Length: 606
Image (cartoon, rainbow, N blue to C red):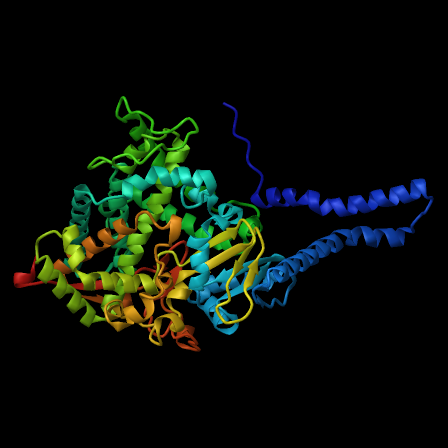
C-alpha cells in the first residue's frame, strides 16, 4: 500500500494562499513598465522602477486599508452613526495587541484587560487586529440585538470556523445557515423533556464518584475535585449521548504531587487519554483565537491540534461504528427530499443521542461532529459549574450550611432527588446561578455580521455602525461582573442576590445581563440538562459531606496563584481568589481544585 503523502506545514499552506495577492502588485507594475517600454517608448530607469516594484504591494495594501476605513466611516455617517471607539495600537496591524492578548491568556485574570478597556472607552469598542476591526462588546443591549432581535444579521462566521473547525467540525456550535438548522432540528427533540432514565443515570454516576471520594479521603489524602467531577461528567455524558460509559473514574483519581511516584502513577486508560486530548485540543484552539484565520503563523511547521484530534477520533469512531451497526432495523429516515428533518420525533425513554440521530443520518462525520460538540458542552458545562461551586463553598461555609439544610429538609439524607424537588429548592438554584454569573462556562464567544448593523447608543451619543462581515467577539464574563449592571458588590460571590431585592432591582428589568447559556435561537439546548445534572450531583455530595476545605499545599507549585495578582487589582476580581483561574473554551482552575471533605455523621449519613 502506498504511503499517504505528508501534508505541507500549515504556515506554508497559509502563505501560499496569500502569495497571489502579494505578487499581483509587482507583476502588475512590471506589466505596466512593459507597456510603456513597448508602445510608448518610455524607458523608466532601473533605479526608479525597482523601488516602485518593491513598494507596490505595501502601497496597494495600505490604499485598500485606508479605502475600507473611509468607506466604513462614510457608511456610518449615512446612517447617522459612528464607528465604535478604537483602542490605539503602537505597531501597524495591531501586532502589539495580539502579543498582549496571548500574554494575557497566560498571565492575567480572564477578561480583566477587556474589562479595564471597557471602563475607559465604553462596553462596545474596536480592536484593530491584522489591519481588520474586531468589535468587542459586553453591552447587554447590543448582545440582545446580536443573539435575538437581529439574529439573522449575525452568524458564527468563517473566522471562528477557521479556529475551532478542526475541533468542532460541522457540528451545531460552529455551523451557520441551513447546516446549523439541520443540526439544531436533529438535536432539539432530545433535550425537550425530562426523562426518568436521565435521573437514574445521574444517580448511578454521582454515587460512583462519591465512592471514589470517600476512598481517597480514607487514605488520608486530598483529591482534585476538578479532575474528579470532569470524570463524573464525562462518564455521565458519554452514557447519555451514545450509551457508552467511558469509565474515566475507574482509571483512578490522581494523588497530590508531593507523594512518591509509585503512588501517583495513574493506570493507563483509553478514556483518560481521550479526556486529556479533548482538553489539549481546546487549549490549542483557544490559543489560535487572537490570530483568527491567520493561526497557521503561530503553528508554522506543525498543526498542534492534529495529534489530540487523532486520539479523540480513535476513541469515538469505534463507538459510532458499533452504534450504526446495532441500530434498530426498519428505522424510517425522518428527512424530506431536501435532506432536512421533517419534524420533531418523540424520543423514547432511555434512548441515547446517537440512537436518536440515527433516525436522521448514518453519515459518520456528521454523527461524530455532533457528538463531539455535545460532548464538549456536556462535560465542560457541568464540570466547570460544579468545580466553581465547590471552590466557592470552601470559602463560604455559611452558604454551604444553608444549602445543605435546604437539601436535607427537601430530600432528606438518603433519597435521590426528583425534578419536582429541584423546583422547590430556591437556594440551590441561587447558588448555581451566582456561580454561573461569576464563572460562566463559556466566558468568551464570537459572531460575525452578515449585513451592516446599527447598534443604539447606550451613552446618549450617536449609534454605532458595524460594517458587513465584521467580527464581533463578546464576553458574558465581563458583562456578568459589571458594577453598573449588578451593583457595587458585583465581584463578590453572594447567592442571595438571586433571591433578595437585588434580583428585582437588576436582573428582572433587564434579563439580558445574565447569559450563561446564550440567548435567542442559539440558546443552549442542554441548559435544563446541565442544571439538573449539577443539582443532582450537589444534592448527593452534600447528603454525604458536611464540609469542604481547600488543600492549598496539594496545589502543584507551578499552578499556584501568581504573586502579582494581589497587586494593582483595579477591578477587585483577583483579590478574592485563592486559586489560579484560567480559561480555554470554558473556565477552569490551573492545577486543579485540591480539597478535603468532612464526611457527614450520625443521622445525617447517607
